[in-house]
Image (spheres, rainbow, N blue to C red):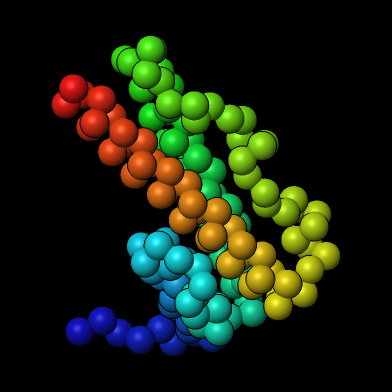
Length: 140
C-alpha cells in the first residue's frame, strides 16, 4: 500500500495533479460526447483553469492537423473527387492568445474553454465525415 506524502509541498503537488487530471477529463468527456453544451466547467478548479484552456487549444490544433492531413491524403488519392476541405489553420481556428488569456478572469477562461471544445467537436465531426466520404468513393 503506497504511503501518503508527508511534506506540505508533496501533498499540494498530489492535490494539484488530481485537480488537473479531473479538468482534462472534463474536456475529454465533452469531446467524446460530441458536444460542449453540457460541459461540467464547475469541475475545473481555478488553479488549473489556464492550464485547462491551454490543453483544449493543444487538442484543437492536433485534431485540426489530423483533419488537414486527411484532406491532403484524399486529394492525392482521389484528385477528381477531392473534397473541398482545404483551409488554413488560421481561418479555421479561433483561440485566444497567451496575452489575452493572461488578462482574463477565471469565468472568462472557462467560457473560452467551452468555445474551444466546441471547435474540437466540430473538427472531429469533419474528420468523421471525410472518412465516410472516402468510404463512399472507394466503394464505387
